[in-house]
Amino acid sequence: DIETCYSAKFTQREIDVCTRVIGTTKLEGKELAGIYYERALKYRLTQQYPYALADVNTATKLDPEFKYAYTLRAHVWADLGEFDKALEDHNTIIKMSPDSAVAYTGRAIEYMRQKKYDLAQADLNKSLQLNPKYFYGYFYRGDFYMDTGDVAKAIADYEMAATLDPADQNVKVRLQNARSRRTSKR
Image (cartoon, rainbow, N blue to C red):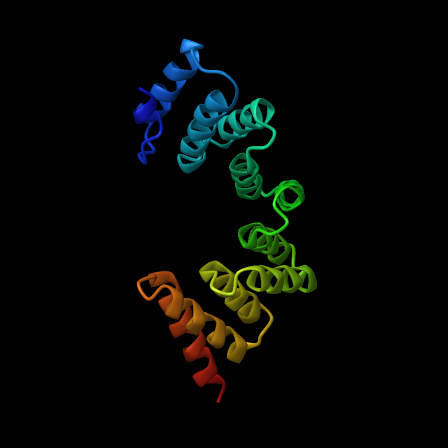
């Protein structure tokens, strides 16, 4: 049952299996936190946000150092439109991992949603300072530049992201859209 709970499938069947695993009470601490996290992830991806939030809260209580649980909770808060709460979780992650490019990019996305562009730009730059080859740092900084009207810089960042992950279709679409926008302004 544990393997099924940890599977990459996100259906009610897997949620039910995770529930069974939780009910066995054979697991505790970090192991049990992992099961709650998995079920929370499945709840989120099936848009059962209140259940996702309850499970991820339990996971962080069982394992206060579980960074992925705070990240998941930030995503659930964002899904619910609670961007300040999402930001709180991103701040917690950064305190736990001040050298994490991923953490700074996550917080930058929340700042962008709130139109706090100076803070978003600082975090995206910090993310890329920490990891100059971080695909999502360039990807989201490209989005930042598109949002703030600097199409040339957006293109440069999307091109860098495309170099880092040539197979990513989302960056190809964004790059094409940015190039089209640049051409239409001429």
